[in-house]
Image (cartoon, rainbow, N blue to C red; front, side, top):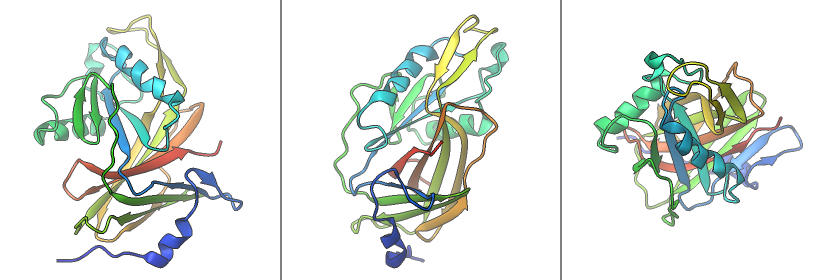
Length: 245
């Protein structure tokens, strides 16, 4: 059985403040040692019940803890597209992610809107957002050009043999005029939309990859990274923040 490799020398390069842009054009994000709060919303532009839930998520844009201890993302699913409106942000892989949650009994079923907080169902409500105090470890991200390095130093009490890194490109300030389906005539305002999501399972604590890409224009982009134990949907640690314009 292989054990995760800790690269202490490499990790020293990440001792910078959260969401700091370096003089060389590099961008850094870093969590603290306590577990942060990872919020997922499964939603669809074709779902008439989703706008109130999206407003709750959108309101986190002004939360003082955003990108410090709170990391929201919105996965748009495609299984409501048949109602007459095709959600341009939806992907089958996002719907499959929600199905995996249901298969693992994290949620009671596949429906929208659906909130999860650190991998546990929060139903259609998001209040109050729980505070996490357990030790998790440091998660650090460095963005240089289109290259991303994600490094995780787990808490010494956590026994991990294989981990899975996740990286999501987030779109902010998105609008859609919906002309068909259940939300016909509505102008939908979206924040924290997952435009692309990549992942990699491996046996060491550093992942080097390319920045996720998108053709969707947004007012601003952010990057959210999280790490899980291989085969688990529960996030161990999360970090991220806005990317430079």
